[in-house]
Amino acid sequence: MKLNFIHAAVAFAVCIMASVAIVMPASAASTPAPAAPSPKAPSAKILFLDRSAVLRRSNVGKDMATQVKALVKKMEADFAPENKKLQADTQALKKQISVLAPDVRQRKIKEIEDRRQAFQKKIKERQASIQAGLAQARRKVEQALGPILEKLMTEQGANLLLDRGLVVLGRNDLDITPTVIARLNTALPKLAVTPVAVPARPAAGGGAPATPGASAKPAAAAPAKPQAGPTASH
Image (cartoon, rainbow, N blue to C red; front, side, top):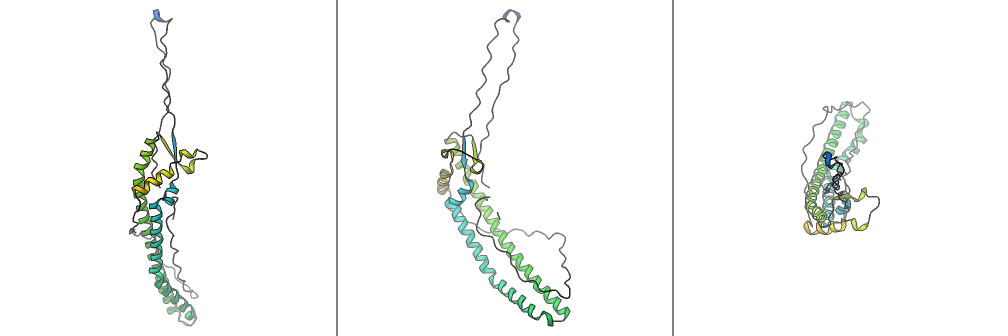
């Protein structure tokens, strides 16, 4: 799964004044009034920001990544016993599948499949709660970044802020990423990543189970691979 930072950019407009003909009285036609000078268009002062680097290198970004890794590791530990039992029961059923009566075989296959689906559902719900908690933490980082970016633009007289990834070539002194990171470290050094329960989505179409054939084999438990820590680029 693949974080969005605030673009604190101030749009600037180029003003062009159209020439206006002035109708003079006949007596003054030979000496027209001088045209008013057009206002000078404001010059663009652009700054750059590497948003992904802010998460990778800031103290709060590193702390968030560490917390997410710990949450994923705990999830794996919590579900390991159930996963091990499900795998063992699946292997045991495979060994006795050929000697079971057809109705018993189908019932046991369905029991294993139901357990596997329920197990995967729990894993996905835990993963979703971790991701929702990370998204919530990122929004708080964005809120802290807003005033920092606005103040830096005011200090340097800038009227446009671009993401570094959009810049092909530019002077290093226009890159405010190190300054932003330093100020963010002071304003928000740490932030808790707390899993948030995500409401379950109703299954589309009801999802009626298929009827297994006489030669059906029990499905092996294959829990979804938990995602790692937060991705810096969003």
